[in-house]
Image 1 (cartoon, rainbow, N blue to C red):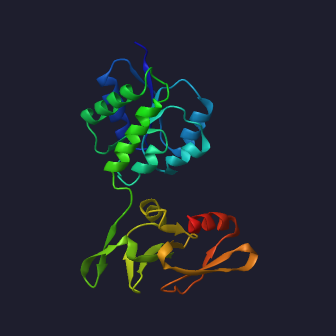
Image 2: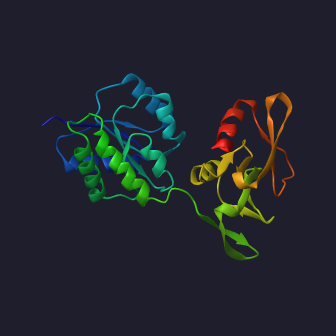
Image 3: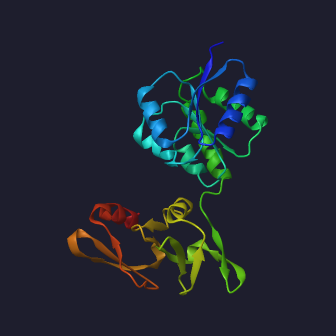
Length: 259
């Protein structure tokens, strides 16, 4: 039987060695041909190894960024199994060659099931998944995974209070602190980064206006023309600073508002 050549992308050495050991223990035909630790290293490797591998096991949060950045800078034409400690990136993973999503800590059974799924979808090794099977997998996955955040559990007056995501008029960051403002004028501190929020929020409802603001479509009252081709977004309740859309992002914002 042809050897199954696997690339590992994992920034934790112990986890990488453990995964490699499990893979090679499960099947003597498996060969881990490369163990990469970061985005830049992986981009360099894939740009010089277009072929020669059959499957990729990939962590998501690496020391130099999210592994999804690799797909923007290199061509990966093989199936990917994502292994991560976070369950927030599942939809994005399946948009980037993902055929399975394993949460840490994993065990041998988790890896075996993922390999069995790979064998079912990819015949022979190294070929792209069958289109109809992959589409069905995506439908099943998206129907079983909660795609977007529905609420936040926030601190308010020495209590924990649930706040529906749809009631958030806008999110704002200043001095690396993120706040959520509701449609009734309340402000809450959120233990998230803006990037993390952007991944969890429904893109049909929320738009990343700039580095400081994410706005809710339902909170927008009007949009004004601003200097140098920019737009000024008016929301209710009104923040203390202008919410500006850069000239480069105006077309994207207009498409979003018209959708």
